[in-house]
Length: 304
Length: 304
Image 1 (tube, rainbow over the protein chains, first blue to last red):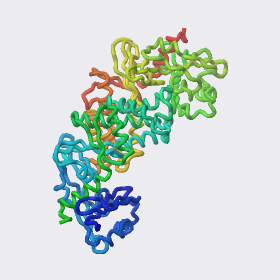
Image 2 (image 1 turned 120 degrees about the vertical axis):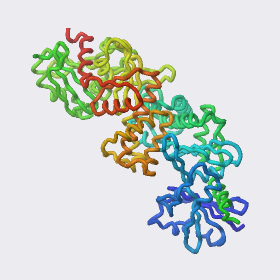
Image 3 (image 1 turned 120 degrees about the horizontal axis):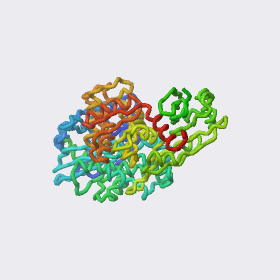
Image 4 (image 1 turned 60 degrees about the vertical axis):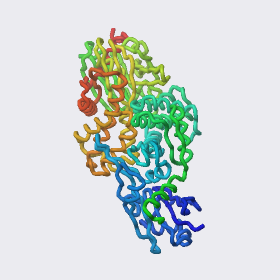
């Protein structure tokens, strides 16, 4: 079957590609460590050809679309943010086009931005909006969580991304273990410890307002030999994720449940944390980016 | 006047000494970068002689007392923690003695520990207890704040340290600016910006439970050019201090005010933050450690 859409989830570190049929099914897929940070001299057309030149040659009529950091200032070309509230139609209307080699045109999906009125503080995401569009049904209210270096929590109502927030959980964990006194006792390469993780989740979730204090327990519990050094990494990871869940759900009222999107190890870890605090969590498809790109391509009439 | 007490505030990085009269007044004082991390081969007797050999010789009958990390496992000898609730009498009763050169005995003040019953989490301080004993009157309830790498908040009631907590504010600030994406836009050496600091204090204090999310604004406000790069360091510092104050006062109910102990730049910065959020703050004497050592020496009958 000849694909009608070549869809790219093109992030900072990795590039994932999907050759898709007109009904949105994935015919073929591949991934490579060819994120924008690995593209030399800004040669994005060359990187695209290297990644999927065969796809391009075999499907000369297929449309091309990409989401993620490829549309940032550091990417191929900047696709200005689409403001919140945003849905598939408004995001699709903000798609930009760039010329690639062989007379092909690549469409780039914009990120989504918002400015909180009370605090006048902006927030942004780029790539996650496409996963959300791909994973969330058009009806109902959904709280979507995309865990990671900078986790995103998004409230989606009838297909509209109404509000979202970024949480620096993953990066703060790395900074604490790598560059504070907490790292001295922690064995970052220790295997995951379920019990210590759950204890950390509860302690972080219980009072997220005291996080700057509670993280110190990842030292004192080790010093007083109440937690094994091998358990401290799981404990601290749990505490930060617990504080994220506590803070974010406190912001959103009492959600009925959350939808987790992302890689399996991370969504598994977050589902386990949600379970500890009694929050229902389901895990969405790992190919929500492909579905989102397909939906946006449709909304932008690239497949007509 | 010949001193009756040679009192040492002997921390990780610095060593401060006070030659004191029998009424507790300071006859002479000095300081040197001779904290325990700078003492080679564990030669603490040698370091003591180097620091104040003249004082030792001139006052052969004076008692010697020290507080701080000198009593930790990494110090001269470990002085086991005195458990909370603790007052001058119970801390003095836990003082240990080590033999120094010239037949002199050095008394070392223990740190103070507590174990939170609900969470079974321990906390510790070493050195701060002496500053608290030196600064807080024997009557009334006081909330004492010792800002720093690991700030301490202690509730003192009629001279008894009833409860305290550690806050990793200073170290988290250093890790965030030095080792996360926030550091890319921040100019850490920029002069203090009062307005940005106050904005950060309010934003951190307002919802400390959302700290993992709100710190991201130190990036987005820069990216969207709503804060100058030169203002971002003050903004982030304010946010962390604001979250500390919000989290710690939330823990303590609604305190009437706080007593700040520490170096002038830091206590000034915290007083400014307290003022932003409407919390009354007074600044204690910078020589509270000397007063505390004197009080503990009296309570231990070293001056009888």
